[in-house]
Image (cartoon, one colour):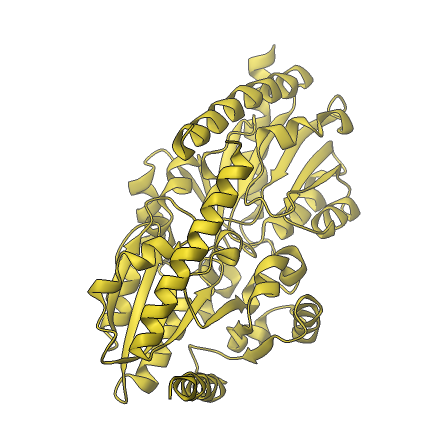
Length: 222
Length: 222
């Protein structure tokens, strides 16, 4: 088998297992979000701020993906989430098999939402379905306003793009309109939200988005 | 062949081609730096600031690695570098074969330094030798102070770590000492520089480091 044949086989096996995960999530009635970004764009900080607003209203499960350490799981657990840390030990993205391997450790029946925080990487995770309802990309203003066209796959795949760290805009040279225009070229249907997980600006619209998606998911189950 | 066998074969083939690149670079008497970071840590901005300080004194070649676009090559060319843009078309790192493929397009004989800006990714490029003299990692303060232990391979492999965007420290919660301590745990021999490519703070020490490495390389050739 050539390398390309093996990659194709891995992708098709990943898709098959992702469908199994999706069935488990749907049977449990949870809404599942796969969050992808560069290292340090603020995925975990966004989850902390989200848990601060939702964890007293519903049970939330987080699956944390990292090369190494339990640091992110410790952070979200401290804000009221349950869940599991997956360490890939070098792998540059989560796979559906890794997620399938921890499903039994999750309390899905009592949960409403599952956040999957992928490995910090704007390239590898783009095309790996984990069984989620929505794949989203987070981009921080400090990463520069030229990124969508340089990393097109994830912006093409993601149905939601969040521009994070807007509180730092006064200290940066950053053209928000240019970034949003590029995202829409790559994916005309993409929703875009601007926020700062640190100051809370824009968080209400993000929480509204989550709650609307949750209602949408529930409505398909009845 | 299993996937692991194929990966091993790819790594060993990459190492073989990297040695060939290294011979070409050494025959030309150039100092070669492989620069690795997340997307948006400031690799290209650092190169621009470096070219502003060195391009009138010597010829500098840049090899730009990106998934897509010629944006970075346009930027460094405007500051006086010659060189080539490599688009991986989805690949998450440069390989020695990609570099070997552009060697004939580089004016190495008149050059003193070759900067290779790898694809923005803190994971995949870590272990791929391109034939460089020094592998370095760039980490920006806006990425958060928990990154070395979460992405250990590149900090273990790199002989120089640069902490960029120190001008933004007053607006962030970031413990510089903690980051430097983690880097030294992963690699006790790593050199560490703090700078801001935007304001110029710390750039003199970086230029001194480059010039010392260039002299060191020249001294091994005579």
